[in-house]
Image (tube, rainbow, N blue to C red; front, top):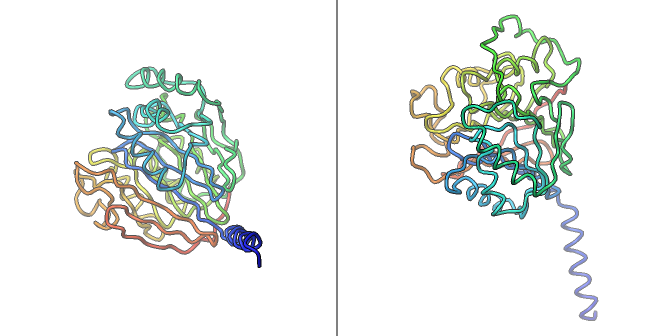
Length: 338
């Protein structure tokens, strides 16, 4: 065999072997210390970053880039900004200096000018102007190749659908309405084969209800990315406990989120799902914190450890804690859709 034929045979085998391999769907819950940033990497190689944390001297932008490198990502194909609060959009302008961002996805209109929104929103618009802008509404799909990303709520409006009757709705009590950005947050259901994940940003209690009652429009899920850092103004039992997830990943900080009532609502969901926390909730007792091995950052001063989710083609999935390398693999669930 000539050298040329040998090389062709080797490269041909490498190509066919690679083509036969089915890469995992990767998710990195990035520690932005009480804000939100989650990196989704499709088996196709396309990436979707949901939110970008704070503007704190580039800390969160650097942590996002570090996770992207671990995942083999050289650009952000879709940056989804769920809403315009500083703990979600503040880090965008710094991130854009460190890694290319192709598409900026948001809900359009800014519904809030008070608090921390004005300055960070202006900085976001300046960064967004350098890429392609996509404004989404409920029912739209974000076109990440290899996974299905459905927007189920945006600008305060939920998807339409028949769903299935939800018996939990009888006990629902609304809370004081929110007219700001949380109530208008983008929420998504992300599907890879039979695997389903729910990520609702900082969606408010009353808007969670719109997805769950009188009929459950989301069906069941394997993993729940806890809404609004698991604060008491979200985590509506009528929605959360209808999802029947195996594991929840909580984007709380040492003193932000993980409200004991919200924590308990997740913990007492059907099947007693595992709770993986980005931080120990320092004001909570031991009964309202996950076991030590499930907590990525146990102290206030931390290294920004991530929690990684790997989803396999058979819909089994593995969650790993970067701090201690503890991991657990979960069987697939018989999912239902809305």
